[in-house]
Length: 397
Ligand SMILES: Cc1ncc(COP(=O)(O)O)c(C=O)c1O
Image (cartoon, rainbow, N blue to C red):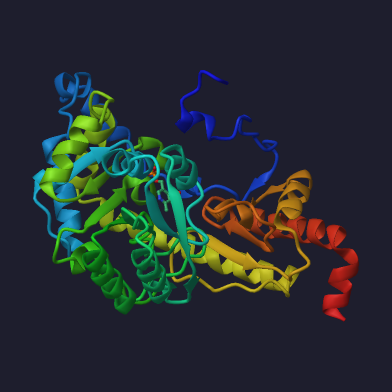
């Protein structure tokens, strides 16, 4: 252990535990197997006609045609970008890591929501950052609270955050979408206190109803935003293709920090072929229809089985964030649910500042079928009732 770098020594030493394969999975943001696209023809072309490209080293920034498609997707998001502002990565998580490598020195701080996307926490932590945690309400990050924290840090001459990390569309885990006013206020703060904004938006197009709010990147007048996108939620997570869109001088440095010899050209070409055929819009529609009905099934099952669980019904994304009565310990519930045959994630995992006892849990409706949703929620409810029997009957009396 003594030989470990500080960035590794800071991390948890135990291996991740796989839940039993018979468990119903409400834990991870896996795609529904029903909406994984058939890419057989695209893959065949990629391996025949495009073999000299797909089995060769790829250009480090990504295939030019894919960068052009991504620039078009960014234009559709109101944030036009040239190909020089696009770097193809091995998914959005990789883009987050590259942003950290670009911007963070040990001892720096960053601002995140409490709760925040749990997979990003160890990535950030490995860089030795201090977290400034900011609350959220139904309009997203409490930018006023962040402003107060920044004022007080500045007054004390303390280090200000290098960037604010947020998931403004269908936030993970809360599924809340940040209002336009808050996005604009955040951009003002970034300008006033000289910070970047990392806008991680994998779920933006997984919208079931209502109107989109402009991207922060689209509202940005001062090149403050590093926008992270991914084909994981648009097509398939196993492709491991995402991107970052940012100012050219940042992209130029991130290309040099990217030490993988270029992201896999085979999967990039498969995506280019899919996009060239114009299959994305109909595919996304299918994804939206499937997840809308999964959301409805999960919301109905939770209301039926655990009526005291409070949650906001999301207009998109993959997750319900359940607030259970205060007597619930989410960690105990997750462990008991796992033994009862359903895997969920305890709320404590989503707090960058530490794993204090929390009475929230996150359940994903993306992966399961309707039958699995009904059965999984029954298993969760029975674990909940047997763990907290006395308190539950008190709460329902
Ligand atoms: C907020 C957020 N960012 C990034 C990702 C990861 O995306 P990718 O598969 O592109 O690494 C996810 C996936 O669950 C996510 O929820």
